[in-house]
Structure formats: C-alpha cells, structure tokens
Length: 101
Image (cartoon, rainbow, N blue to C red; front, side, top):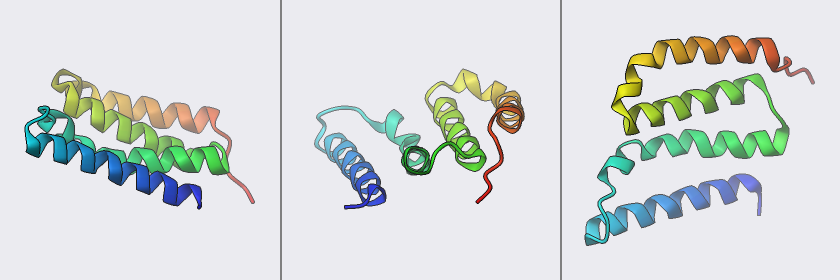
C-alpha cells in the first residue's frame, strides 16, 4: 500500500465518521465539517512532505490550507488572512530551498 492511498483512505474514513455521527445525532459536527473539506488539501500535503521532503509548494499549500481551516473555525482570524498569506509566502521563499532534481 502506498502512502498516498493510506492518506486518502484515512481522510475519507475520517470524513465518513464525521458525517455519520452528525447524521445520527451523536455529536454536532457541522462547525467542524464546514472546514472539513480543507483536510483534502492538508492531508496530502503532509504525506507528500513526509515522503518527498520539504518543498516550497507543499509548505505554501499546507500553510494556506491551515489558514483557511482556522479562518473557518475562528471567524475573528479571517481579518488577518491577507497578512497571514503574505507572511507565509515570504517566509517560505526565504527559508525553504528551491527544489531541483
């Protein structure tokens, strides 16, 4: 089994449990599931970083996914979204080396 299959499998199982528990009335997961789609961005980036190492694109997309998730979960953080994006991209460009084959 490849890591990519493992990542997608775990993400789908996690979302299935979340939707099922919400539908059954076990828990109120609507606020979490509003930003749950971001996990489809975050989880593959994490697996790619662990598999291929830290690369600029993966770090930027991972940071943007985390920023969107926090913006959904904590609405007061949405005001800082542009500052967060600029700081993230600038820091990654300065710190993370360019990927060369």
